[in-house]
Length: 83
Image 1 (spheres, helix red, strand yellow):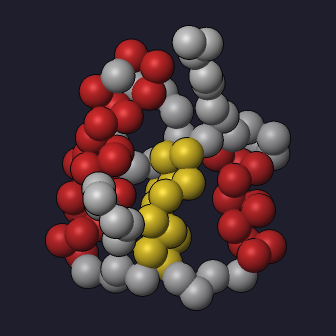
Image 2 (cartoon, helix red, strand yellow; image 1 turned 180 degrees about the horizontal axis):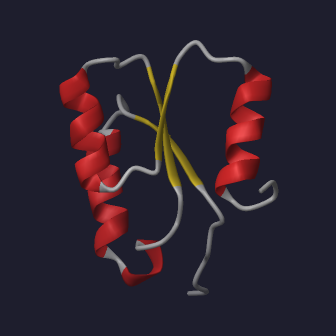
């Protein structure tokens, strides 16, 4: 099986089967996931959830609803397209 690589992971905190924070932990535990930027899209605004996301290794936390142009700007900045 061919190995895949990603420039960015975009996930939601509330997903079926595995929540976003568990996903971050799983990705960060793998050598190929240690340095991939991970942005969380969520309706969650509690300080505790944000802390848990940061502790797990989230690069950023974007609260829904969001402006699509803002999301594009953040993605470009995180993956290094814009200084």
